[in-house]
Length: 143
Image (cartoon, rainbow, N blue to C red; front, side, top):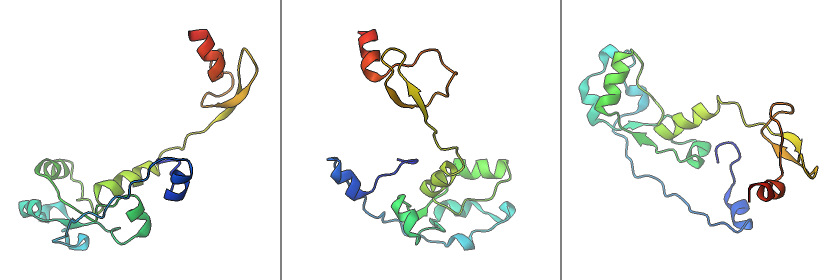
């Protein structure tokens, strides 16, 4: 779903069920721009605050299930302070999506079955594995 997302019309066309996720009821008690930037200014009272996600109003972020607001746990705060990292301004879902954008997308190669010669897509580059089997030939070999 992260690399090849399907939208509602396509999901329904394929005969799958679609579930619309309701907007979270998280209400922010502090805007992300009001969170102190130098970690030395952050007090433990931040644990009682609900921080607004900077992408809460973005349509794409809503499609990716932005939680709109989030809280910092005590262990997170300890981690950020220990490593001298700034507090996040994005909710966990938006941070996860941002990380996936840095990954290399999967790449598929043309491969052919070693037994019947059928051509299919495979994640294995040519010459990196011994024999490739199509699904039908693989089932016959295994069973």
